Length: 343
Image (cartoon, rainbow, N blue to C red; front, side, top):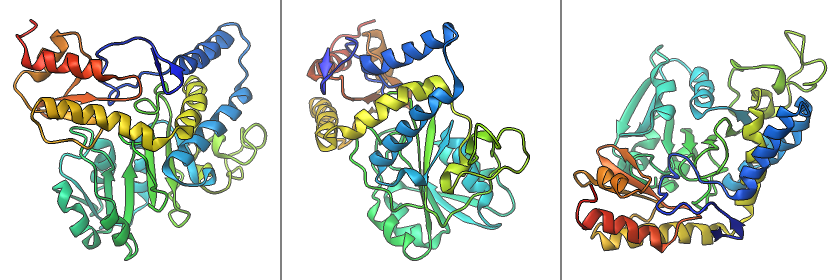
């Protein structure tokens, strides 16, 4: 099928981008080409540097910052871990109840008096200024609720650090979060790339200890950075870079800049329009999100039995709508949930 100017595999009923994104054909082709080069002995490590740069620039554009501020990682939790390790003893961290653990566990595991307090998502803004750090996903993984960022931005002006995870947001939600102290995101969901890359946009005032420092984050990564214990680091956030997963970067180098170049308001309207249509037909409140949580008994089982790809999260069925989804997917989901049990 064709969507947003590109060909996608015809995968009716695929409503699980919040777990694994469905890439357009040109992204899959880029990864397949990298695999062919590897198999033929034609891959050279430094050949992937332009891909790393392109993917980094695409992520920066999606979140509203400069590529110079973006560090390369492999997982969200490892990058949040750098931040958690750098906060002072006794730091008070505020988060949303039910927040994805990659955002919270790095702080909770610090000991040394670092505390993590959970509050309802809609109370996060009103309590933000009483904490040292607020760490939250812009879009909640379990049910797609969207955090109100305006009060967090206001709290930041009074000294509260703000850490945002955009893993469930970047790629469908129009974002402008370059103001935050740290913005982290993984590649394999809405950014439609093979798992193995993550990025962190970092305010220059936050300089974490380089616990994962390696050769790739050095100024001369193919020379002086390879065999010295103290090579000159790359400037700014690039000094935090870890060694890239090359095949993931081959996909991200084309997928992420392409997503950044789309009309993001149109992408958001497409995804939320389908999600809200599903809610209307099921007599649920509109989600206003690309993710719909259906808290009905056996909902996930009924959808799976009808051949739809969904996830079970927090006791509900989680359905997620992205670029390749159409109204036919809404129809299939409604039939599975309201018709005779397909099993």
